[in-house]
Amino acid sequence: MKNIINLACKVILALGISSTSALAADNQAFGEATPAWLQGMNGEQEWKTWGVLPVYTRHFDRQAVIDDDLNENNYGLGIERSNGRWHWMLGAYRNSLRDTSVYAQLGWTPLQWQFSEKASISLGAAAGLVSGYQNTDKGYPIVPAGGFLVSLETDYYVGLNLFIVPTIQAVDVEGFVAAQLKFTF
Image (cartoon, rainbow, N blue to C red):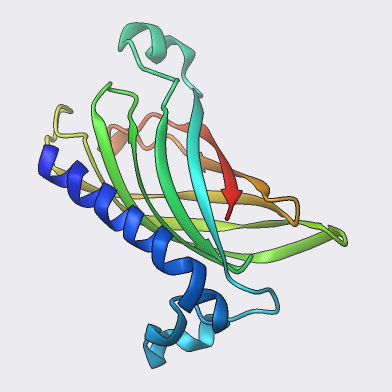
């Protein structure tokens, strides 16, 4: 597990360092290195790199929080590359089972509302992979992750992501809402 965390931290650091020059020069998700098949992802907004801080989770089943001793202070660190419509996300956090999770997700938020010149809200979904849930009944080291995504992005270097994941009893998923603060650099 430590190897996965170390690798995630190195990737997050590398993405953050490389984003300030090559990525900003070209309005592509990954600058000049963007593969041709991804170049169609550009929307009207420029790509921004965000540092992400997962800060809180609220599970829908309040009794499960008590019975299963679920952690709702899911602190962590991540990086997001977003143009308001597409969101590439990578990071790590302390999950509800009090284990370390590493995630990689792609968010798509086609519903956009520009409510001021300096801020917008977008709605959609995110899907990807997450580790850290091997202590569940199924015990898989990496599992699919997905849910609804609400993203607030501003020109004031701050934003917010809300993830809404429904309860799926067949795969032991307790539904929740999770909040991430994000800061652009």
